Image 1 (tube, rainbow, N blue to C red):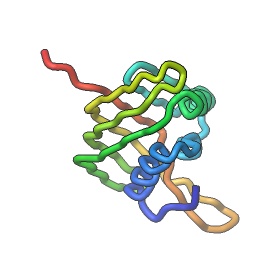
Image 2: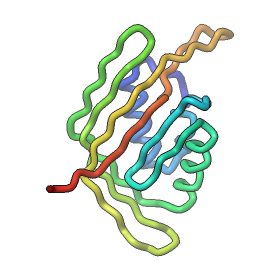
Image 3: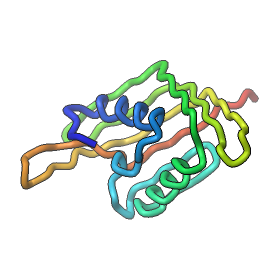
Image 4: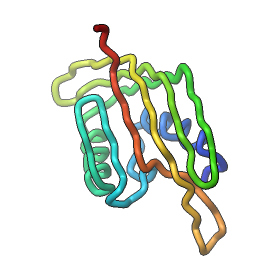
Length: 134
């Protein structure tokens, strides 16, 4: 993943990587404080997030990700993200197709590379949920 100039660019790159079945762990800070909530999972710590994303990459295909309302606010080395996303994928083990209208939110932090003065943004939290009518 090349350094991105903005947190919004990182989010859009993440969506592209998901569609293209590329590794997603580099988008998350490798730290014990990193948390990712998915539609059916809760992951605590960078190692658990990376392992789950690697398994997801191996067991899913044909991703569709459509952002409908991306809002990104950047402040002093961190950024908040919210979006409404239609997503769909195929489970390669069963052939079953899944589709959700989902809500995404998260926080990214700016990470500097001291050797090259490049900076990048990585998720420290991500929450993906699927709304249900009450």
